[in-house]
Image (cartoon, rainbow, N blue to C red):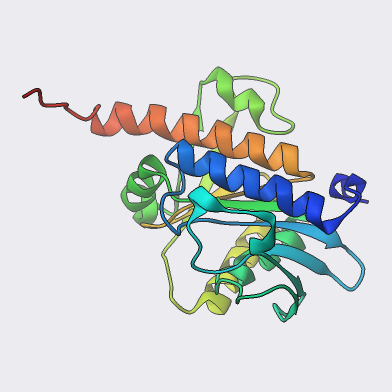
Length: 217
C-alpha cells in the first residue's frame, strides 16, 4: 500500500499538494499557471487527486484539486484536469508511484532543450544525488530521459510509459522546452526528488550556460 494512504482524508492530501505548489512557485520552479501535482488516493479502481487546469500556483488551495479515475474522468471537484493528466497516469502505472510532481524551472527548461536531441542527460559526481531514493554514492550516474514535447499528450504519455517500463532506473524525466516530471512512493519523497533535481539542474546549467549577468544602474 502506498504511504500516501496514511492521510486521513482527500482534503489532507490536497492541502499538502497545494503547499508544494505554493512553495515551488516561491522558489521559481513553477511560475504562473505552470506545473501540476497529483497523488494516488486509491490503487484498486484507481483514484487520483490532481490539480485543476490553468491555476496560478502562487495561490493554490485544497479546493483546486480534482478526483479522477484511471481514464482521467472527473469524479469530484470543479474545473477540468490538465491534458498532462495522462502523463501522471502513465508514471503511476509504470512506476507504481504514489505522487507525481511537475515543475517548469528555468534550468530544467534550458537543459531539456540542450539535451533533447541526445535523448536525455546524465548527471554524476555530486553528493546531492544521494537525495534520490536508493542512491548511495555521489558516483551514481543518473540518466534523465528527455522527450520532445507533443501537444498530443496521450501519444506522448504512451512514449513515456514505454521508456519508463524499459528502463527502471531514472527518478525523473524532462520534456523539451517544458520541464521536469518526478515522483515518489509518498508525497514527501516526491517533493524531495523535485528539490534534488532542481539543485542538480541549476548546478549543471550554471556550469554549461554560465551565471546570468546582473547589470547595475
